[in-house]
Picture 1 (cartoon, rainbow over the protein chains, first blue to last red):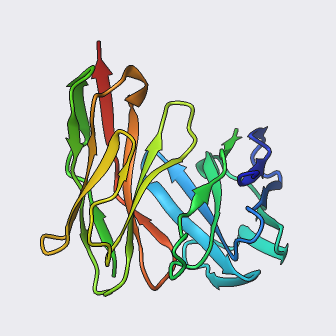
Picture 2: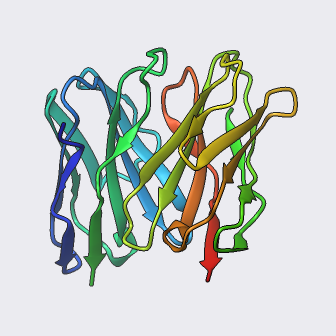
Length: 116
Length: 113
């Protein structure tokens, strides 16, 4: 089975530009998570969805960040305008409910974002 | 609130030796899951092993085992017969009724020949 698929793998952009990160979760999973990883802050949850509905977006840094999940097989994380401090690895992950016996959260390979 | 504590920033082990990576957790949930992930230098997050709070036996997956002590709220990862390819960051994490995965700060393991 295909795992979580993220694109792009690497992106270098100039400050002020819009960045869109994309994610395809594992088929059948009803939870989708966006995490950000930096050296300073470690792994932070930005937002997560259940059945395409955002449940907790308290980790989204500010209004420049937005996330959507228009259907069960696709999600985007958008940064507009981007700033150098947004440089990080952005992970998308998916899973079944924690109540499921098979509730492991699987991660994509990450999108490495550099804002210059 | 849920919290994961990994007190070992770095660990060293010789090839073929066993190593234990520590993890303690705090939660008020009665039902929860504990996970370990490996992050090699290439950056991907690789799932290693899972322990449910109601599982009576410690989880094992090949060379990985989880030493689960519920009363002490600890979930240590044991890697037996270390290999050079085990050098990586290791994250302990938990998931409870709030669904999201809460991570510790990680332990960097270096395996020497």
